[in-house]
Length: 220
Image (cartoon, rainbow, N blue to C red; front, side, top):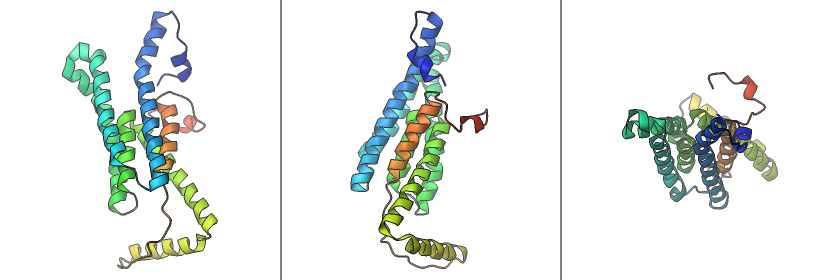
């Protein structure tokens, strides 16, 4: 990914201008991804729900956008319009799938809301970068865990929550069916995913180095 410094350094040099032009699709995707993530986070914080009116258009829009980018790029000239559109659509589909599959499994297990699954799928589709999707999810869960700890401390339910987690683990290990109280506070995970999308977008779409970038595999 092109560095954000390079993006802003517009010169008269034709090669530099070409680099800037190539990087603009990532900039537009970054802005759209942050906008969608922030809207979803506000909705989740205020209403405890991530509306489909936000996530579905974002997923479809991301796929259409990257297909259009591929259509307008070199692939469209070299191998035909449909092939060019497909070359732009492929990474967006891959990133959306990478975000959807693990979170859908968590949803099926009751550990994640449907709106959260659709939000991270939208992040994948808009970013068209599977690394960005994975990092957004990872950071999102870290932020969600931090919010959970704060909520538990403020409501003085740390011991109660620990007991419920312990009982749930025993029930899962020994395959015992049972019911647990459903009065635990709901954590707005969309807030965490929004933070993750912003951080991951800066790293993978704009090429801004992060403290952990040096530890990542060169293949990333």
